[in-house]
Length: 108
Image 1 (tube, rainbow, N blue to C red):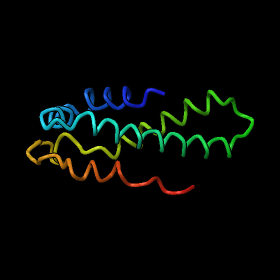
Image 2 (image 1 turned 120 degrees about the vertical axis):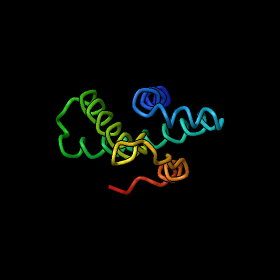
Image 3 (image 1 turned 90 degrees about the horizontal axis):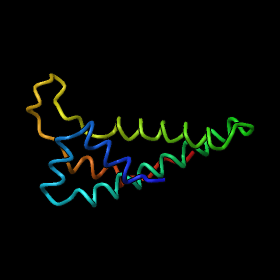
């Protein structure tokens, strides 16, 4: 899997302010590595869960569905590019985002 590539595209397309901030702070590569590790953990977690629920399912289909769910998990947990009222005035919390990706995935 190319988790870093997926994370980079997600940041560029859906979180451009966070991407730019990380780039300016020279933290983009480390953040991408951290987010990619988090995405990999979520992917493995979902593959284990889906495989246990449907042992007869095609492993490629399980892996694909698990990746979709893992990306949704990561997308939901990334900080929003705008505040809840839509003004965008609230700054992004890089510390909160980095703390999230460093937390372990809960056991199944």
